[in-house]
Length: 336
Image (cartoon, rainbow, N blue to C red):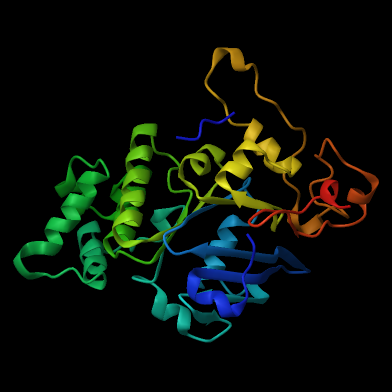
């Protein structure tokens, strides 16, 4: 067991939620076909809440995040249907409103900062611009001071060298920390982080997560963390969404998902996390691999890998059903 230190509301309740996604479906168009990479995805994030989306590579996590902030390349990606509300305002499919919320409203740290940082500007110039957007005054060198303090908190020792560098002159870990600093300095209402700790050692990971949680406490910032590492979710999240093949297959509180996973895929993810104890025995290994999204099997996409597969699993896709107040699962094991 990992050591630990939703129901979609109606529109009249939007004011209690910071982000609400309803029935989001996204297609990727190829030369000869359309591939449905997200299917009727719904989620919510309360103000000041930390939510994680977990799943293997190719499950649709990053596509969902990019669809929320409106940076999917079109073509090949097309949002087929769905609605997105932020801070009580419908920002999709309303034209242009998402742009107004980027920065101090919604900010995102991408999985590979080399493609999101501007290659022709130094890190200093890009952080100063972020500080200006975040409303930090320039008087008395306040912006420069805040920038340097933030980088120091992210365990960057040679701050001056990093500030004077261009993105390509830094390591992947340094670029990641610079991108996180840009998001933190703007003090947004929601930060979306796509695999924020990839390539970082454990000490730096903990420092970054601590910084993000401090931001949550100080200004009630909400966090949406995308990760394949259930251990990160176990130590950070208030609620967890589990994704597989472009669908939400289970959601619930951190305690629900970690202590008592209902979906076989959630159980597989939990059992793949090493506990670090000698007596814990070897890790469980599940056969198979994530499915090809262009050729999904009939029925439940997980059934070729599921140890509890039934005949109905091979024929029909299970709906996402409420199991309690804040628990949802899509599995025929829980159908009457």
